[in-house]
Image 1 (cartoon, rainbow, N blue to C red):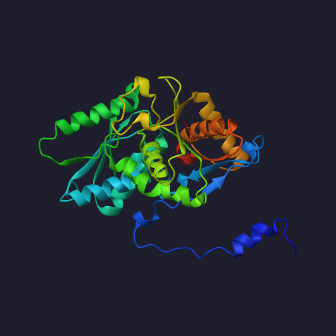
Image 2: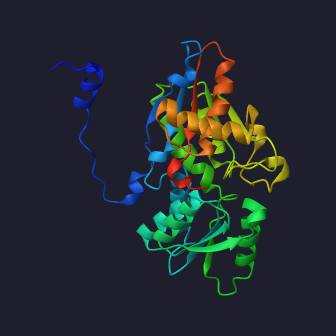
Image 3: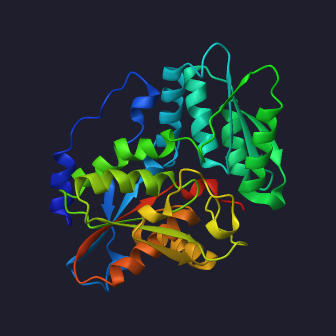
Length: 315
């Protein structure tokens, strides 16, 4: 029987056998890079747009990378262990990553989260055994940061290790060490632009630094919500927010401003036109990447699919 897609059949037959790993942490990273097709049909053929499928990490998001680095560095420095509890503020994905890794490594995890984060995220972190401490939903991620800092300041017994993803250099370091070299290799050293939106800013800062070391001409473009009262969960409008200490805007080659509706609509289009079910922050990334790509006559633009759509259903 002949196949209607012989090239696909050949690729399937040539696949390597599944890998085996001794530790959960070894599953983090080495995520696929996928080229967009239908969403870029109006671009010149010399302009390519690729997405890094971070939703395929074991915890389902890009935040698995910095969470792993934070755990490993904290153990190496002696900040974790001996019954210490990891605590941090999170809007969801980093909390899921902390909870998953904490369960695998036997570390108790406490998470400060805005009370209005999606029910799916709450359910996932609790399934891993983490404790949730709710902050004011009207104060967003900044309110969670303030409450986490307050709890750490009041920790007279010294039970907490404050991971502090917004200030911890392990956050961008994870992407400098892993995400950047993966993209460089997966594009056959052809990447010309990297685009990512800013929450903690670890992805854009770390990946940008790593890629610039390979080729200083690569353009690193940040993206932010266009106003303070946005609906792009996990992202920060820097002019109106507590700016993460790891964020260095002067290292970027530009910033794009994304409306909430654009991010949500693009997430829908990615699912229906590319078969990529993702959250609205990934939608914002692709909006910005397509803007950049639309201004080029040739180039290789890479952005990030931050997580999977399943943690947004039912909102």
